Length: 136
Image 1 (cartoon, helix red, strand yellow):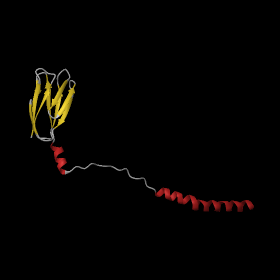
Image 2: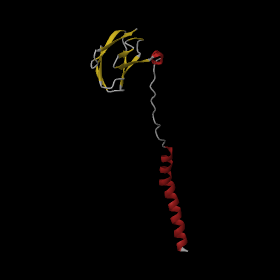
Image 3: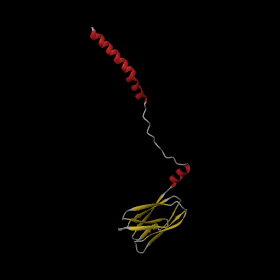
């Protein structure tokens, strides 16, 4: 009989301890919500979106005979991709950029953010290849 009374007392104390100490900790941990992952989406102004949507990329192919087209008219913010179609490395110099060495079939793209008449040249070809880009 003593054992039964001791067992009941032990169970009651265990229940009280659980309710007093363990249950509050479990409730607190279930109320903690993880911070949401922040996603930052860059926004653009309507003017920037319009400019981006109107940008064109033009190509100038450089081969042993010269550059094609030799004279190119583009709009402000357009890009020009220079493509080396020769069998050797060449350097393309421009009024607004430093010379860039291009291996065969390699290319580079230049963006034009100012209006004006610009020239470029390819030094390694004889006769020297030159061309003009008119940015309006």
